[in-house]
Amino acid sequence: MRIATRSKENVVILDLEGRLVAGDGDLDLRTKLEELFDGAADAILVNFEQVRRMDSSGIGELVAGWKRGRKLGVRVAILRPGDRVRHTLHLSQILPLLEVYEDEDEAVAALRGTG
Image (tube, rainbow, N blue to C red; front, side, top):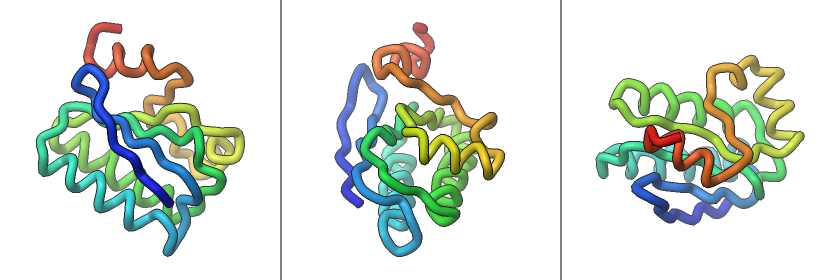
């Protein structure tokens, strides 16, 4: 799993690439989200466009990050989950809880409160 970090209009975007599964990406995502929470990010957009596979460990880390973000007042949303990731999130009944976007500009505007 590779995670690239960039910022767009004060929204931190995490571009994930690879597999978000136990032992391959799950702890990387946790570490990166914790760094951003410690750095007082206001909004985080997790881009799943290049994620090929996600398992329960990946879901667990995403949900833990989402919950921690809510507690700290940091919005955590997801961008472009592919069919496989969307299906996994749907089966785990997590999808309705998350803010999901297909367009990056729309997501950034919404997370900044201007969309």
